[in-house]
Image 1 (cartoon, one colour):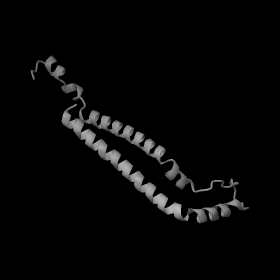
Image 2: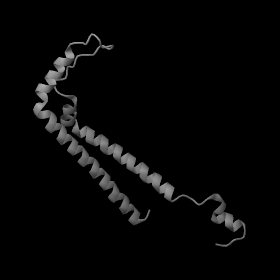
Image 3: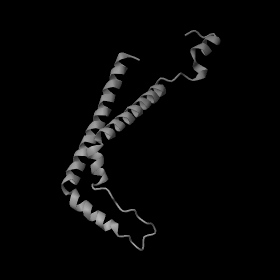
Image 4: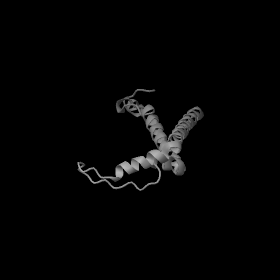
Amino acid sequence: MKPTTLMAHLVLYTLVITAIVVALMVARSRVLDRYAATSAQSWEQWKADTQSPDPRSPVARRPVTAPEPPLLVLSRDYFGVVLTTCLAIGTFLFAFMAATLRGALHSAPPSGRSARHRSNQGIVT
């Protein structure tokens, strides 16, 4: 691989990973701002509303036992796990796409026009 190509891959990879990190940080900030302040009252109200089963409902719903909204817990307590998982998946997808594009752009010529085929016909290249 040429040094310029390698540098281009590294710059593009850095941009992709930076975009993932920034997007997750912004999403986490919005979730914490939205649910941290008003979560107690609205969450308790929603839990109380779902405790009484609806007789017209075709399914029986389990009562909610979580003391806080799941999205708040995920964003606050498990953000490191979410970030690590997204970075691992992003790295894998970037490597896969880079290898796929490299293979597509640097594919061998069609079999009828290869150098060996031309030399077998007496054409010198």
